Image 1 (spheres, rainbow, N blue to C red):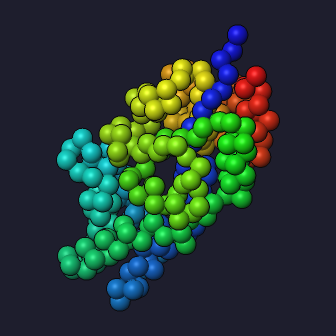
Image 2: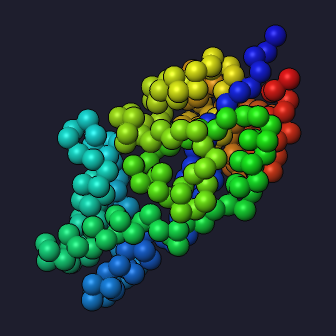
Length: 241
């Protein structure tokens, strides 16, 4: 007999909400406030290079190497603008601090139109909700300003957990908070490995949100794939009986 569903865990970025503008545009806007004129396309390319390098050298915000999310991101910003020929250390620090702090503003985020209703429906079905996200400690504030925080019983970010998806250990931490067997828990997210394969490897019912129709069977069976969160309530009810 199948265990009834009790909890739904959520990825956040690109599942419930997304960044409203490109990083290049956001960084350029902050640079303009500091009196600089830089090219968004050049900044975007520099950011991607810096982000990849920093992620490779210091995975998960460098938390196991003595860093934290703020210092990690500030180094990404400084390196990005250094590649774009901005050399003043004080100016680089000011821009980096402002970008880190301002990223929490609601204007930088767009909540998907199906997110709020999906979360409300889960709660109305008697399910408890939690977050498991590869994100830094700003996530709580971002969810608050976007009006979504109150839906969740707990948040686990990879910075605070000290481990990131696709490590199963972050889901082990979530299961401890849920206090129920893995079979009573579902996870919803948009990343095939992080949000589908990894939770399923520890016995959680993983469902893949595939808004852009990228995946097909046999990678993801049809009953495990959502094209929008509007499909979620009927899917979850099948697992609650």
